[in-house]
Length: 166
Image (cartoon, rainbow, N blue to C red):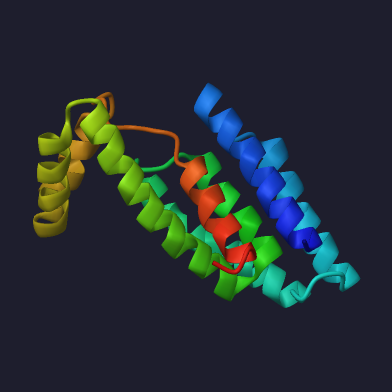
């Protein structure tokens, strides 16, 4: 197993555990992981160049930042994907993001069923897609609605799937 895979899987497990227990992803984890990705790229240890590490970090940030602005993810989730981007590079962080989005959607449905909110969740999603402005306002006006869940597990699993070649 490559050093990148070990770092991605190890950090992913740590982020998942902390996010489930405390509903946050610590800066020390995300910044340490991003720094490790940049240092490994500078040392030429991985197949990711310094430009690739910076590009992956920036793309990871750009992919999840809009979700954070609308209140769908926490800042730690954004920083976690960006940190994985520093290790993976732009193409692989994009693939990790796609896998995380699919996994996050499945998790959202499972959480909605578990909490007895499937109908409201599906209706809210339909409204978000068809009438963006009103739906976004409704989401922002009701942040305490029982619809939030830790997203680091989806991000970590998406990144792990990429480094494992799945």
